[in-house]
Length: 219
Image 1 (cartoon, rainbow, N blue to C red):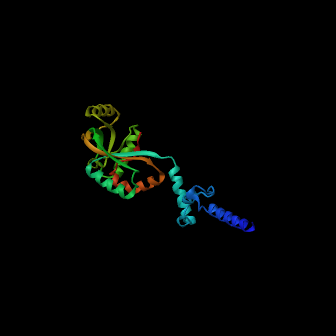
Image 2 (cartoon, rainbow, N blue to C red; image 1 turned 90 degrees about the vertical axis):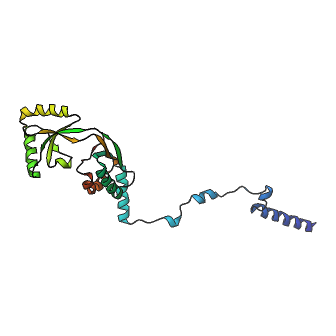
Image 3 (spheres, rainbow, N blue to C red; image 1 turned 90 degrees about the horizontal axis):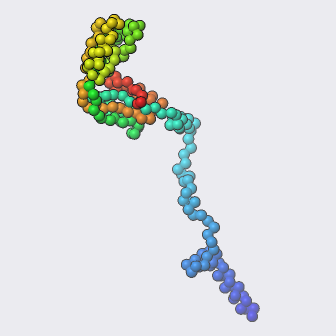
Protein backbone atom coordinates (compact mmCIF):
# COMPACT_ATOMS: atom_id res chain seq x y z
CA UNK A 1 0.00 0.00 0.00
CA UNK A 2 2.77 2.39 0.93
CA UNK A 3 4.54 1.60 -2.33
CA UNK A 4 1.44 2.50 -4.35
CA UNK A 5 1.15 5.81 -2.48
CA UNK A 6 4.76 6.71 -3.24
CA UNK A 7 4.25 5.87 -6.93
CA UNK A 8 1.08 7.97 -7.01
CA UNK A 9 2.89 10.97 -5.47
CA UNK A 10 5.76 10.65 -7.93
CA UNK A 11 3.31 10.48 -10.82
CA UNK A 12 1.37 13.52 -9.50
CA UNK A 13 4.55 15.54 -9.06
CA UNK A 14 5.69 14.66 -12.59
CA UNK A 15 2.34 15.67 -14.05
CA UNK A 16 2.39 18.97 -12.12
CA UNK A 17 5.92 19.70 -13.30
CA UNK A 18 4.96 18.99 -16.91
CA UNK A 19 1.79 21.12 -16.60
CA UNK A 20 3.48 24.09 -14.87
CA UNK A 21 6.30 24.18 -17.44
CA UNK A 22 3.95 24.05 -20.42
CA UNK A 23 5.02 20.58 -21.49
CA UNK A 24 1.37 19.56 -21.88
CA UNK A 25 0.28 22.70 -23.75
CA UNK A 26 0.00 20.76 -27.02
CA UNK A 27 -2.68 18.57 -25.32
CA UNK A 28 -4.61 21.59 -24.05
CA UNK A 29 -3.22 21.51 -20.52
CA UNK A 30 -1.13 24.50 -19.41
CA UNK A 31 -1.31 27.38 -16.92
CA UNK A 32 -2.55 30.81 -18.11
CA UNK A 33 0.39 32.96 -19.31
CA UNK A 34 1.43 35.61 -16.79
CA UNK A 35 3.95 37.44 -19.00
CA UNK A 36 3.32 39.92 -21.85
CA UNK A 37 5.92 39.23 -24.56
CA UNK A 38 4.43 41.93 -26.82
CA UNK A 39 5.52 44.60 -24.34
CA UNK A 40 9.11 43.41 -24.57
CA UNK A 41 9.01 44.13 -28.31
CA UNK A 42 7.78 47.66 -27.57
CA UNK A 43 10.63 48.48 -25.24
CA UNK A 44 13.09 51.21 -26.29
CA UNK A 45 16.39 49.67 -27.25
CA UNK A 46 19.01 50.90 -24.78
CA UNK A 47 21.70 50.97 -27.48
CA UNK A 48 19.67 53.53 -29.46
CA UNK A 49 19.52 56.05 -26.62
CA UNK A 50 21.94 58.97 -27.02
CA UNK A 51 22.88 61.36 -24.25
CA UNK A 52 22.91 64.96 -25.47
CA UNK A 53 25.38 67.59 -24.37
CA UNK A 54 24.21 70.95 -23.03
CA UNK A 55 24.87 72.65 -26.38
CA UNK A 56 22.96 69.93 -28.25
CA UNK A 57 19.99 70.28 -25.88
CA UNK A 58 19.89 74.04 -26.48
CA UNK A 59 20.00 73.46 -30.23
CA UNK A 60 17.09 70.99 -30.04
CA UNK A 61 15.08 73.38 -27.83
CA UNK A 62 15.69 76.19 -30.31
CA UNK A 63 14.50 73.98 -33.16
CA UNK A 64 11.34 73.03 -31.25
CA UNK A 65 10.59 76.66 -30.45
CA UNK A 66 11.14 77.62 -34.09
CA UNK A 67 8.76 74.87 -35.24
CA UNK A 68 6.09 76.03 -32.77
CA UNK A 69 6.47 79.72 -33.65
CA UNK A 70 3.83 81.37 -35.87
CA UNK A 71 4.57 80.85 -39.54
CA UNK A 72 4.17 83.36 -42.36
CA UNK A 73 3.39 82.85 -46.04
CA UNK A 74 5.55 84.97 -48.37
CA UNK A 75 5.99 85.08 -52.13
CA UNK A 76 8.15 86.83 -54.71
CA UNK A 77 8.18 87.18 -58.46
CA UNK A 78 7.60 86.95 -61.27
CA UNK A 79 10.83 85.35 -62.51
CA UNK A 80 11.66 84.61 -66.13
CA UNK A 81 13.09 81.23 -67.16
CA UNK A 82 16.73 82.17 -66.55
CA UNK A 83 15.98 83.80 -63.20
CA UNK A 84 13.84 80.83 -62.14
CA UNK A 85 16.62 78.35 -62.98
CA UNK A 86 19.14 80.32 -60.91
CA UNK A 87 16.67 80.66 -58.02
CA UNK A 88 15.75 76.98 -58.06
CA UNK A 89 19.41 75.94 -57.78
CA UNK A 90 19.94 78.32 -54.85
CA UNK A 91 16.78 77.13 -53.08
CA UNK A 92 17.69 73.45 -53.42
CA UNK A 93 21.05 74.02 -51.75
CA UNK A 94 19.86 76.38 -48.99
CA UNK A 95 16.35 75.38 -47.91
CA UNK A 96 14.85 72.01 -46.95
CA UNK A 97 12.66 70.23 -49.48
CA UNK A 98 8.98 71.08 -49.10
CA UNK A 99 9.58 74.50 -47.54
CA UNK A 100 9.31 76.32 -50.88
CA UNK A 101 7.43 76.17 -54.16
CA UNK A 102 8.37 77.59 -57.56
CA UNK A 103 5.14 77.74 -59.56
CA UNK A 104 4.91 78.57 -63.26
CA UNK A 105 1.90 80.43 -64.59
CA UNK A 106 0.68 83.08 -66.98
CA UNK A 107 1.39 86.72 -66.19
CA UNK A 108 -0.33 89.74 -67.64
CA UNK A 109 1.45 92.68 -69.22
CA UNK A 110 2.43 95.41 -66.76
CA UNK A 111 2.96 99.14 -67.22
CA UNK A 112 4.47 101.62 -64.79
CA UNK A 113 4.86 105.37 -64.45
CA UNK A 114 8.63 105.56 -64.66
CA UNK A 115 11.21 108.12 -63.57
CA UNK A 116 14.87 107.58 -64.39
CA UNK A 117 17.42 106.40 -65.19
CA UNK A 118 19.53 107.95 -62.45
CA UNK A 119 23.29 107.90 -62.59
CA UNK A 120 23.70 106.88 -58.93
CA UNK A 121 21.67 105.46 -56.08
CA UNK A 122 22.20 108.75 -54.24
CA UNK A 123 20.38 110.67 -56.99
CA UNK A 124 17.59 108.10 -56.88
CA UNK A 125 17.26 108.52 -53.10
CA UNK A 126 17.22 112.31 -53.47
CA UNK A 127 14.39 112.15 -56.02
CA UNK A 128 12.48 109.71 -53.84
CA UNK A 129 12.72 112.06 -50.87
CA UNK A 130 11.50 114.89 -53.09
CA UNK A 131 8.51 112.84 -54.18
CA UNK A 132 7.70 111.92 -50.59
CA UNK A 133 7.64 115.63 -49.77
CA UNK A 134 5.08 116.08 -52.55
CA UNK A 135 2.94 113.30 -51.11
CA UNK A 136 3.66 110.93 -54.00
CA UNK A 137 4.62 107.34 -53.26
CA UNK A 138 7.43 105.71 -55.22
CA UNK A 139 9.41 102.48 -55.20
CA UNK A 140 12.44 101.04 -56.92
CA UNK A 141 11.80 99.25 -60.18
CA UNK A 142 12.13 95.47 -60.31
CA UNK A 143 13.24 95.24 -63.93
CA UNK A 144 17.05 95.29 -64.39
CA UNK A 145 16.60 97.07 -67.73
CA UNK A 146 15.04 100.06 -65.94
CA UNK A 147 17.50 100.39 -63.06
CA UNK A 148 18.39 102.81 -61.53
CA UNK A 149 14.86 104.21 -61.59
CA UNK A 150 11.61 104.77 -59.71
CA UNK A 151 8.05 103.59 -60.26
CA UNK A 152 5.14 105.83 -59.29
CA UNK A 153 2.66 102.98 -59.69
CA UNK A 154 1.96 99.80 -61.63
CA UNK A 155 -1.01 99.13 -63.94
CA UNK A 156 -2.48 96.29 -65.97
CA UNK A 157 -3.18 98.50 -69.00
CA UNK A 158 -1.31 101.29 -70.73
CA UNK A 159 -4.44 103.45 -70.71
CA UNK A 160 -4.74 103.23 -66.92
CA UNK A 161 -1.08 104.21 -66.51
CA UNK A 162 -1.48 107.23 -68.82
CA UNK A 163 -4.60 108.35 -66.96
CA UNK A 164 -2.74 108.29 -63.65
CA UNK A 165 0.21 110.17 -65.14
CA UNK A 166 -2.17 112.88 -66.35
CA UNK A 167 -3.46 113.18 -62.78
CA UNK A 168 0.08 113.57 -61.42
CA UNK A 169 1.24 116.23 -63.89
CA UNK A 170 -0.57 119.11 -62.10
CA UNK A 171 1.22 118.07 -58.90
CA UNK A 172 4.58 118.87 -60.44
CA UNK A 173 5.55 115.60 -62.15
CA UNK A 174 7.28 116.61 -65.40
CA UNK A 175 9.85 113.95 -66.34
CA UNK A 176 7.85 110.78 -65.72
CA UNK A 177 6.66 108.58 -68.57
CA UNK A 178 4.65 105.42 -69.07
CA UNK A 179 6.73 102.35 -69.95
CA UNK A 180 5.94 98.66 -70.26
CA UNK A 181 7.79 96.91 -67.47
CA UNK A 182 6.71 93.39 -68.46
CA UNK A 183 5.13 91.77 -71.50
CA UNK A 184 2.38 89.17 -71.22
CA UNK A 185 3.69 85.60 -71.10
CA UNK A 186 4.67 82.91 -68.61
CA UNK A 187 6.77 83.32 -65.50
CA UNK A 188 7.47 81.62 -62.19
CA UNK A 189 6.49 82.73 -58.71
CA UNK A 190 8.33 81.73 -55.54
CA UNK A 191 6.07 80.80 -52.63
CA UNK A 192 7.20 80.11 -49.07
CA UNK A 193 3.98 78.76 -47.48
CA UNK A 194 5.21 78.38 -43.89
CA UNK A 195 8.24 80.59 -43.32
CA UNK A 196 9.75 80.29 -39.84
CA UNK A 197 12.30 82.62 -38.28
CA UNK A 198 14.99 80.02 -38.94
CA UNK A 199 14.09 79.85 -42.65
CA UNK A 200 13.86 83.65 -42.81
CA UNK A 201 17.46 83.87 -41.63
CA UNK A 202 18.53 81.55 -44.45
CA UNK A 203 16.66 83.69 -46.99
CA UNK A 204 19.20 86.47 -46.44
CA UNK A 205 21.79 84.34 -48.27
CA UNK A 206 19.37 83.92 -51.19
CA UNK A 207 18.88 87.65 -51.81
CA UNK A 208 21.11 87.73 -54.93
CA UNK A 209 19.07 84.90 -56.47
CA UNK A 210 15.83 86.86 -55.98
CA UNK A 211 16.91 89.28 -58.74
CA UNK A 212 15.73 92.29 -56.77
CA UNK A 213 12.19 90.88 -56.34
CA UNK A 214 10.94 91.61 -52.79
CA UNK A 215 9.22 89.03 -50.61
CA UNK A 216 5.59 89.98 -50.02
CA UNK A 217 2.75 88.57 -47.97
CA UNK A 218 0.84 85.87 -49.86
CA UNK A 219 -2.49 87.59 -49.20
